[in-house]
Image (cartoon, rainbow, N blue to C red; front, side, top):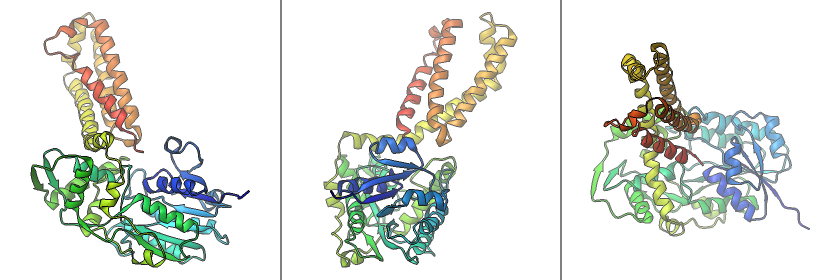
Length: 434
C-alpha cells in the first residue's frame, strides 16, 4: 500500500490556502492545515488535521513541531496591511525566517505563495515584506519554489475579489475608481494546480514564476466584466471618482483596520491598483507549467447565481449597517444623558421614584453607548450586535410591564425598536469573515 505524502498548508482557510488544501487533498496528499482561528478552520475543513496557532508569533520550535515529517509545506499565509489583527512584516518576513530554520537539513519542499510585482524597494510594505520573505527562502539551502500570482479570481469572495463584486453590484451608476489602471488576473484553480504540480516535483527546484493570463484589462473593463458575469444590466450612468476621494476613503478604511476590520479599499490596495497588477508568465511556461486561463475563461467556469448577487449587494451594505447601528446606539445614549431629567420624568410619571428613574436612565444610556462603541471593534462586533438584540428585547419587555401605554403613543417609540432589532440580526448574519 502506498503511503500518502504529507502536505502542510499555512493559512489553509484563506482564499488561496483553502483552494490549495482542497487541490492537494484531491491529488492524494494527506493535508494538515495551519491557522489561528479554530472556528474558521472547523467550519471550512472539519475533516482535516488542524494546527491552531498564530504564525506571526510562532517560534522555531512551534513551527518545527508542525512541519516535521512533511513532504511539502505551502506558505499561503499573508496579510495586506498592518492592523489590529495583522503585522505584515511579522507574517511575511519574520515567520519565514523561523520556518527556514525549522526545516534546516530536511528534504521538505517549500512552496511560497508570493505576489506578482514584489520588490524590496516597492511602494508598499506588503510588497516589500513579501520580497524580503522571498529572499530569505531563495537564499536558503532548502528545496523551494516561489509562485507569484496576479489578481486571483475565485468562487469565494474575499479581499480584492469581494471588492470587485461589490463595485460591480452598485445600482444604476458606475463609480469608476482608478479606471485606467491595468490589471491581469489568474484563476484560483490555476494557482492551486500550480501548487499541486510543484508539490509533485513536476516543477524544478529554484523556480520563481509569475502566474497570470497574458492579457491585461483596465480596472473599469474588469469591473464591467464581473458585472456582466453577475447578471446585472449595464449601468445607465458613469461617474469617475476623483483620486483624492479614493485616497481619503482608503485612509478612513485604514483607521478601521486598526479596529480589526479588513476593508478591501485600504491604502495598500489603492496604491497597488494605481500602479497596476501585472505579471509575465514566461518563466512558468518555460518550466512546463500549465497555461493560465484568461479572464473570460475564468468567469465562464465560475457559478454566478442568486447567492453571488446577494453577496455583492450585501457586502456594500455591511459597513453601512454596522455604522448605522453604532451611530444609533451611541447617540441614543448621549441624548439620554443630555436629557436625563426629561427621560426620567417618563418613569416618575408612572410611579417610579426619582432615584430609581435617574438610575434607570443612566444605566440605559451607558449600556447604549457601550454597545455602540463595541460594535466598531471587529473582534466583538458579532457579540455587540447580539447584545443590541438582547437589550432591545429587554427594553420592550420592561416598557410593556411598566409603561404599556407607550405602545399606543402616536410617535411609536416602542414600535421603532423593532426595526433596530431586525437590523442587528442582519448584522449578526453578515459578520462572518470566512
